[in-house]
Structure formats: structure tokens, C-alpha cells
Image (cartoon, rainbow, N blue to C red; front, top):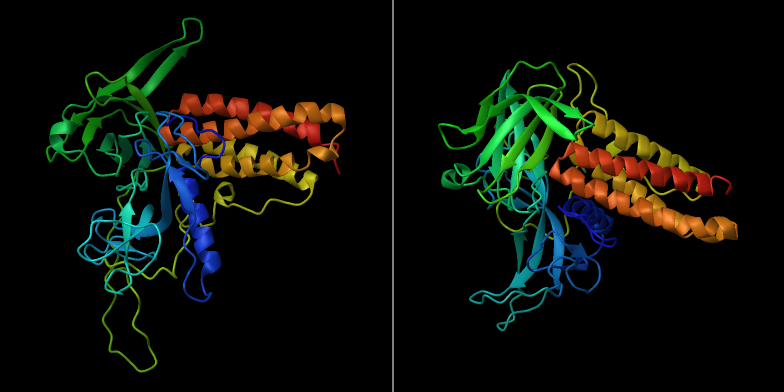
Length: 423
């Protein structure tokens, strides 16, 4: 994914913002206010902006879309619900996705962005449609990344000792058909050495990835590895495509999510209510559930499960010293996530840092004129590096993420040194 200009939103960010807005409306009188209109590119759906304009990539005019959070089954995409729960077909846990909302009338293919009445007076029916890049959830307990071509997606897993598997998906997170999977050329590298003089990398342990017997994934037998196990998949999706790098770090063997246990049957009673469950029909617009922003690091066996501080968003403080302290904390958290290989979660503290930078922009008047001239460009660099960290984190290239983090740390340090005299 390319770095996004300021003002564009990522899929992960969209889910968090939309669910927060929906929760704010829960419990209020009907009808529930609609999610705000966003602007997107017809050919680059990962471009989402808050105002009209043109696509930064193809220059096409952006078109309006109304985005909302929903929950779907990783296996049965026809199941769309408004709350977390289990799939009514396979009992797997539903996962958070982003959908577009439209309204239709029976017998008509026309879709509307506003609620209304049909010609016969009946209310329009809501339609939820999964968007490209609206689902970045791993299917098999691994780490999920988006390719730089913004179409392919991959999930790396380490399900058994010395076994690496790579699942390949399209832009809707659907597995590639076996004929397309056979065109993918890939290998997994477990050890490599970089020569800073020649700027060349030598692979010391490389294993070809081959299509499995059932055509569901690519697999390689690798060297035994101690945990955390770091592995790099180098993938060429088509014969004329450039090879891409995806870095995975496994704290333990990966495990595919098991189907949810069926609820035990019990006799109904007058005092008990029927438990709600996910269904494939459109859910009421008045309900929503906030999904987790990103998976937390695996807890040690027997340890109490605590939320990762890096993945918990907090309100922006009111005072400059408190904002700077949060900025220092977010900088450390990004470094910790990179160190343990959780590249897909980097966007959470990076976006929090971006919000802190925006808050400091409103406090430029509190600086001396000489510092004010250097503060504005430093804040702009910090915002740009936050976007860049998000973009590189999506694609799973550790070298690119580390490079962006170095620039981010420099920008954050400059901002702190400029504002630390403000009380």
C-alpha cells in the first residue's frame, strides 16, 4: 500500500471511527443517524477521504460512499451481523469488517445512499456490501498482510514444528483459486545475512513454497526454529510481477480458530430471554459493537489476559506536557511492536501519535515566534511518518517499517524538544 496523504483513512482506522460513532448513538431515539458520507476512488478502494477531490493515484474524481462496521463469518461471507457472535452455519466466531451501506427497492437494481420510501410507499431495504480491503482478518490464526499491488493478501502460519504455510487471498480476502495459486512463485527464508558494504542480502536458509495437495495454501518444510520464530516469505504473484517481501514473527505455533461450541439446550422459562445470535439477514441499524483494534500479543500459558497498552487508544490530553508524554509512550510502543514482529498492529499507536500531532498544531500560538517556524514542519513530518508506518505495516515489510520508524522517532524527538518548554 502506498503512503496516504494526510486526510485519508485506512480500513482499520475506518472501522474504529465508525464503531465509535455507532456506539455514541446507541440507546438514542430512532431513527439512528446514518454514518457520514466518505469519498472513495472507484478504482482504488483503499483511498478513503473525508472531502470531495481526486484520487492521488489515478486522478479520477472521488465518489461518495457510506461506510459502516459489521461482523461476518470468515468462511461464509453471506453471513453479516451487527454484533459479535458465532456463524449460524459453521459456528466459527464472526470477525469485524467494513461494509458500504445502500438502500434498495424490490424489483429495482438502483441503490441509494439515503433512506427513503419506494414507489409503493414501503420503506427501502438496507443493503450491506463488503468492500475491497474491508476484511483484513486472518483465517488460520496467522499474520495477515496486504501486498504492495493492493490486490493480493497473504497470511503466514506456523502450525507445526518445521512447517510454514502461506495462504494467498484476493482483495476481498477470498482464497485464490488453485489455478492462480499455482502461478505464484514463492519461498520462505529463515536466515539471511546483510552486507552493509555491498548492500546485498545472502539467504542462508531458503525453502521453496509448493502448492499443498488440497490446493488450499503454499507450504514448505523449514529448519527447526526457537520461539519467537522469524520467517520471511518472498513472493512473486505473477510471472511479470516484482518479488515482494513479507516478514512474519511467530511467538508460538499458530492455531486455527476452532468453531464455537454449540449452546447447551435448556428448557425455556418465563424469566429467561432467548439469547441473541448472528443471522444472515440485515441487522437493525441501532446496534453496533466495537471490535478490537488489533490482536494483542499472545499471553503466556496460564497468564492473565491483559490488553496490550499499545493497542488501547486513549483521549488526547489537554495540556502540552501530557501530550508530549503520550507521544513518548507511543514512540516506545511502536518500537516494541516492531521488535516483536507485530507489524500489523503498528498502525494503532502510529495513528494515536498522529492525533497528538494534530492537537499540538492547535497550540502553535503558545510557542515563541522562533520555535513556531520550526514546529509546523516538524509536526507535518510526524504526521507523514505516522501514515507511512501504517502503510508499511499493512504490507509486512520489516525493513520498510524500521526505516519509517527511524524517521518517525526523529520527527517525534524534534516535536518534543520544540514544545517541552510549554507548560
